[in-house]
Picture 1 (cartoon, one colour):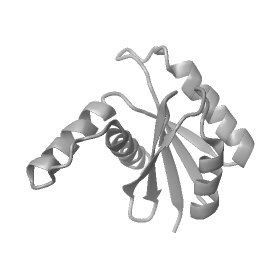
Picture 2 (tube, helix red, strand yellow):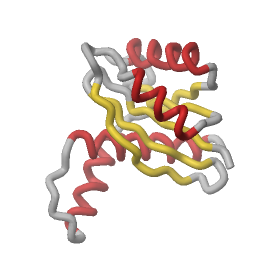
Picture 3 (cartoon, one colour):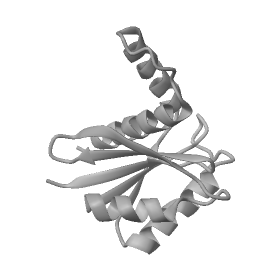
Picture 4 (cartoon, one colour):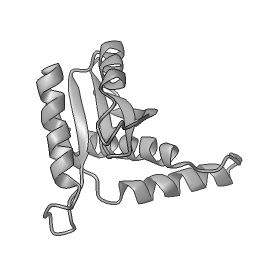
Length: 140
């Protein structure tokens, strides 16, 4: 079995999902709070130590035409830092509309009995799940 950790990176919060390459399934793990617009490296290190992944995946924000967004540069920098710190392969997967889809999934879940208010942290985690599901679908 091979474990993959996926990050929906943001300057404020980073959603994290864990996936399995055998079953090609993903599950939400946590949302990390950035510190002074920097990733929470201590928590990322703990996750990597705990899960021992063979691959990291990061959602890459792009415009509809494929060009960079304002956030693309900081996400690419995060990818380079991940690779440099942990010496693991880092794949980038398109993240267009994943937060919208995540919010929709959470609303549907809430309508089936879960009454808790949907938080931004929940959306970030489910967005990471969707990014990882897309990565698995595009790399079969």
